[in-house]
Length: 68
Picture 1: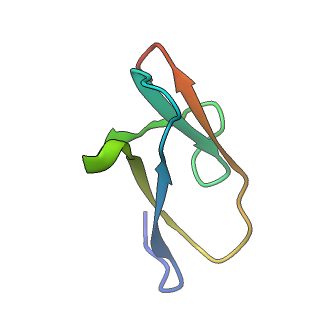
Picture 2: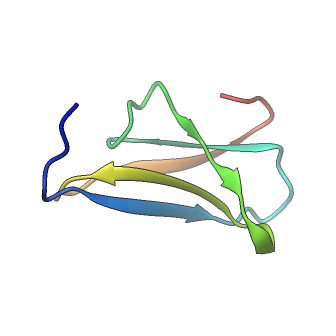
Picture 3: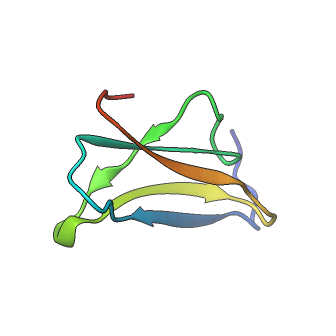
């Protein structure tokens, strides 16, 4: 897959209000039915990074008990 010059890395960050084993990122920049699993970072935040082009993207963070 070739990279377009107008694409940029975007970091999605989420901090759950209570401890959860996994958080999945669903959205237009990834297939809605194939979420990406967010990775823990210091301070209780979770992150996922995706390379996206210009535009408007819908996304949701989904806390869950099972891995993607």
